Length: 69
Image (cartoon, rainbow, N blue to C red; front, side, top):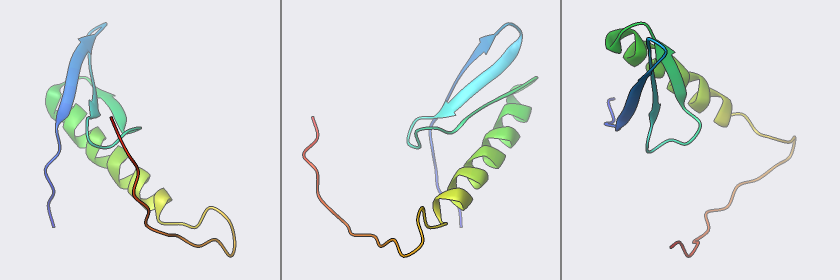
C-alpha cells in the first residue's frame, strides 16, 4: 500500500535535509535528493514500527477528539 506525504527539504552544508510534514518526528538527510527520499522511507518505517509496540505492558488505547486551532 502506498500513502502520499509532503517532503519538505532544504540544503544544509551540502546535504539534503528533510522531514515529512504530515508525520512529526520523521527527519533524515542524504547526499542527494534521491538518497534523502530513500532515507526518509527508512525513517518512516522505523517510526511506524516503533509506534506499533505498546508503551507499557497492559496499556490500552482509546480514540478521542481534540479541539485544534
